[in-house]
Image 1: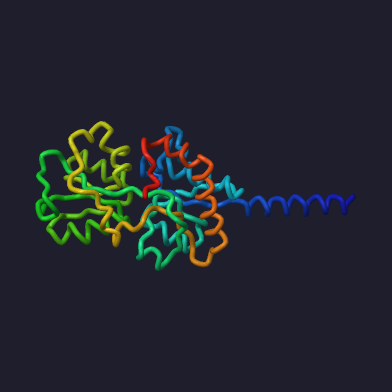
Image 2: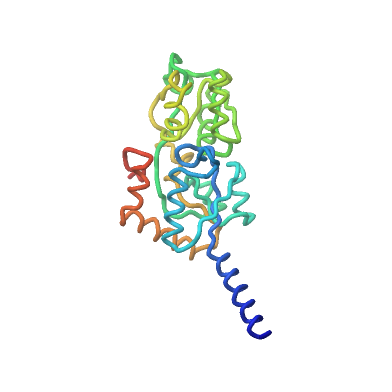
Length: 256
């Protein structure tokens, strides 16, 4: 009987360890609607969350979502707080120096958003204006690299939704943001009707914005990277990607 109980205990322990090994800890910043945000009851949702869940299903892992402030995403990944980041992180040269990425899973451009009535004809035309950006984002890098030197005041925030709160409160003149995120998270909501896109999209600034959003993972995880790349291709081929895409957008955000 003791041997049977011992065998059962070992079996249970092994099953538990195996189950834990099947988890994939996925970091998200849930302040980036419609890509990653929370439902009324506090559950994470959005395009990124649905894509992550589809990828986990494809590689037969269980997604466990871990909320993380944006500027701590890469440090947290390196510290092994989670396995991957699936939260609209752009693949850039600077980030590739410290982490690895899968192939892209979408690619949409960013633009400048200003209060209606502000005349815009390039960065120099908004000298003295104050724009809010997400800390440690590609938009912040662009704003600091191109707008600040033209005399624009750039203010960095821990979360994009904080930027919108300060715009509505009159403390900012605008922002630089992903076109789909700022449409869904601000322009199409009450308080956003007095603001608009200005200038061309910023996709040509690849040194800041990179080549699309990918799954970030630690260096040296070649096996996991290969699995996720295959999973991205699979959900595109089976129509799962399109179903998720069409839930949030009216065109294919995968891009060129």
